[in-house]
Structure formats: structure tokens, C-alpha cells
Length: 197
Length: 197
Image (cartoon, rainbow over all chains, first blue to last red; front, side, top):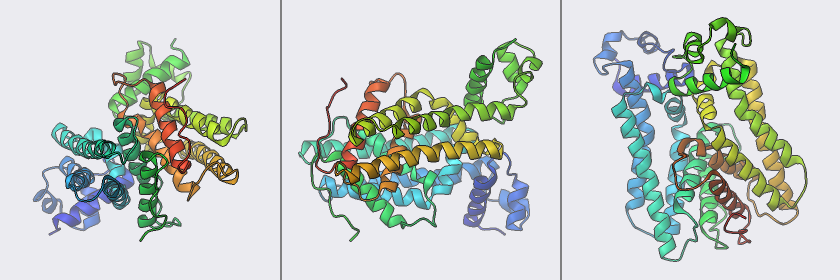
């Protein structure tokens, strides 16, 4: 009997390698070396597997958004934290993100709606943080919406270029991305420390 | 007899709406109101149509890379230009980019190789420009590779969030993105003008 997590891990792997359309429940069962009924005992359909795989990516986004809303520390400190978390989660979940961006059209509409809502929650949190920093005089931002998309974009895009064999660790990449985000919002300001603590 | 450009426009539209796998040559012929032979007279296969559609996106990238290599103006001026061009092209070609990111696994390996090479050409040009700016003392950049990915990412990601009915024009968005890129590389420097000329 395959465990829920194990099924999801293998499904994510196979969707990533071959795409949703070309992966059958038979393929997934074969790689798990179980019968299909033990998968169907836990998941109604291949689409449900896809929903769960994709859901992980935006659950992270929503979780980071939640953290950002907890107002501890200055806007700069919190911006660094939210960007680092975004980058670390993108690196960790890069294969799930690939599946999401490639196969989201196969998702049931409710699942797609939930995913979109999680992304929006992240953007709203980041936008609110930027506006707060402007109000406190810490940030100089022309348009918080554009800066939100720019930060979201440079973080999310890591899924497309990150290679585990590259010269920088996930922590170093995330730290540098946070530096860049701080530079974007702090006109002529302190760029923060230049090396991870 | 359908014209080459018209066929590509309709194919891109249908791949964008329904995905490559779910669009048949029959569907494309039907929307064009022509017989399939008039498509096959110009394109060998549906895959060739996909290659051509995807190729447009990275041809732009390669073209911008080429322009950036022409060394006219300061690194800042050229960085502004390359970022604005990237953003404008992404907005213009956002549907083609969606098709590329969703269906690249259906491309023949040669086509995929060429696409990747065009993207790399863009990144190499941008990286070279950043290093040049560091050498002239105009830019302060910790790691040109990370900054290249960050700029590429925030520009490319526009394809995912841009809506024609949004409050900013493509030119305004591109101008602000260029401002942000300049802030990233100019520590405490002049952010440039704050409104499009």
C-alpha cells in the first residue's frame, strides 16, 4: 500500500519529466510498484494528483504572505525575510512550479481558483509591506504594484534557471535576491549587509 | 490559400487558448477556413508550427542581445534600453511566451536547442554589460550572474501578470522596470528620470 506522500512525490516527478498528459495512472502505479487501486483509494483521479502537486507551490506563497502580515521588525527586515523565503521555497519547489506552469490548464477550475488566490495573497502582502515602508519613509517606491510584480518575478523565475550544481547555495542566492529587492525600494539607501550572517 | 503569417497567427492563438496537444491541424484549418493541404504546403507538421511560434519569442531575445552588444552610450543608458526592449517585447509576445513555457516539451530537440541558445545570448549580453558597468565604476554589483537572472526574471515574468486593461501602458511599465534595474546596479546612485520622456 503506497503512502499518500510517496504517491504525490512520484506523481510530481513523473509530471515534471513527461508532462501531465503523457503520464498515466498506470505509469505512476508501475513506478511505485503498487496496483492502481491503492492509488485510487487515496486520490480520485489523475487530476486530483495534479491539483495536490500544484497546490504545494501556492500554499508556500500563502504561508509566506501570512508571515509577512505578522508585523515584527522594520519594513526592511521583513522585506528581506519575505524575499528570502520566496526564493528558498521556489528553489525547493522548482519542479512542482514547472508542473504548475506547464499543466495548469488541466486543473479543475476550483483548484485553479485557489492557486490564483494564493498567489494574489502573496502579492497583496508584499504590496502592503511596500506601502508601509513608504509611509514610514523607509522605502522610496514609485508604484508598489510594479515593484511587487518585479520582486515576485525575479524570485519566481529562479525555478527556470536554478541548478543544484551551480556555484551558489540556495541560501546565498536568496540572500542576494533580498539585497536586490532592498536596493529597488531604498533609493540611495543602505543596501544592508553584503554577506549572509 | 492562407498566408504564412496568417497561419502562424491563428496557430499561436489556438495553442495559447487550448494548448498544443488539444489543437489539431483540422482545428487550425477550420478557423482559417482553408483546407489542410494549404497549411501543409507551407508547414510540414503541427510541431513545425509550434517551433515557429516559439521561435519568435527568443528571436526577440537574440535581437535585443545583438543591440546591447553595439556599444553606443554609457552602460546605464544601454541597460535602460535593453530592459525596456525586453519588457516591451515580452508584453507584445506574451501569448507566444505562454505557449513556449507550457508546451516546450513538444518541440523537436533542435528547435529547443536554438531557443535555449537565444535566451543564453540575451543573458550573456546583459551579463557583459553589467561587468562593463562595474569596470567603468558606474555599477556596483555583487554577482553579475544573479543580477542578470533577476533582471531577466522580472522582465520575463510580465507575461504572467500583464493585462491590456491595466492602468499602465506597456511603455510606462517598461520604463519603471528599467528604473528598478538601474536601482539594482547603482548603489546609492542616480535613479534616472522618474517619468517617461
